[in-house]
Picture 1 (cartoon, each protein chain N blue to C red):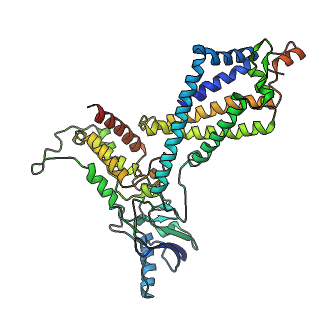
Picture 2 (tube, chains in turn brown, cyan):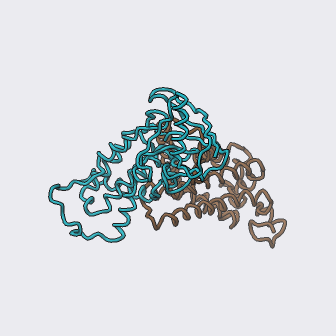
Length: 223
Length: 250
């Protein structure tokens, strides 16, 4: 469910490449489908899944620490992947990132981002402009870069683990599912991080300002 | 060969253990690892001290008695062999070797490098068997078994119950052992009748014994002297899920 949410979230985010209107239309739809109930139903499902994931992790980790209460003086890893060994650290980083991300773009604690209005329809929020302005700060982009990288590391182990833990894989499908986990992780990494990186480097700019400066330029992209 | 050994010494189950250092002198490179310990123990005994206690029996990789984490890896970093099959030629002159017992709460230390692995026996007693009428053995070929099933069952049946999988797992999980034992019997028609009961009982006994949970790092299959694949864990998870559902609805 959480992986499905991430894929949907990334796909929606990529509408930024189609320009301000499409992204803002999408944001308006999210906040108004099912008379505004839709987004809260989705949020409720995601929060429940997220909390259950954390609660189960805490419970299992406590059991595991009791089961292996003494450690080797010489501790050696034979084949466990780096991603699998840093799951707790990548997971904790993702929790911190989710809190920051919600305050950054959902709650919008920064008044400058909260007050942005769509130039074509001042009655609705300008998500496009908010992203362009929000990713001008290199430190914020760096935090996104580190967090999303660790999120994708978390997923590269986690997705393949879903099929192992639920017994959905066989000898023949072990490698395909491991590759699927890696492929989804790489896809999410590129999809999520391309936006802040292209904004920070000036490739992706405010289309209104860009089109005013250069009417022939394609919407959203500043050649 | 001359080596430095860092050995876990613990006088009794409840005593506090510690690492002690021993110098192993003039060890033949063709000696096995356990023979090296025998040589070191001879010196310790001649000096009037308590020798290093460790488990061993067949010394040919079959019985599953020998344990030891060698440089942090159960049965050493060499793949597909038990501790008794490790030879000193795999080490270099002057090496420092760390020798510790298998570490898991469910495998309490008895003395030094010996651990109590009877938790495995209790898991087997919970369901790692088939019920058959004895006294009139049926014709062995009366039930046809496909080659693939026979091979899968045999691969799982090669488990010698040494406990290296538990010792290598950072969670001290016994999923590879239980998966191998359940898969061995569940794959064959003779074991199919008691499949659900077996899987539920063995997994519950495993949890009762205090083994940890699998987090899919597969250190277990990397150190398994019989190279049993973590595929048996996926199969155990599948069988356990199906048995749990059937237990509720049937």
